[in-house]
Image (cartoon, rainbow, N blue to C red):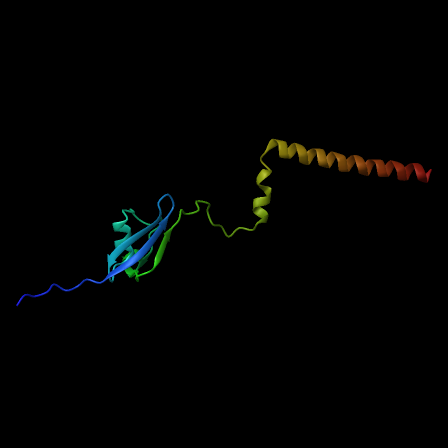
Length: 123
């Protein structure tokens, strides 16, 4: 009488990432996201997130048929600042300052012309 080794159930998981497209992986049932990342030879996720001291990818158990997508992280900092603070980004550009000065000179010239016209009509 021979003993049969236990059958290992496998999960099929699809990984999508830039530059590699879609890749199919067969992982043992109960495999985690970290197992998938190791199998795909992905060093780590862009930032460290943990639950009870364990990396998030060690906690997430993959189910057969799941699709995992890895995309580049936007490097622009997220701020809580008002949109108004971004409007003034040209203020340090000398050409922008020239344009502002020229606009002010035009408005002042228009005001002076209106004053002269009013003065001529009043005489």
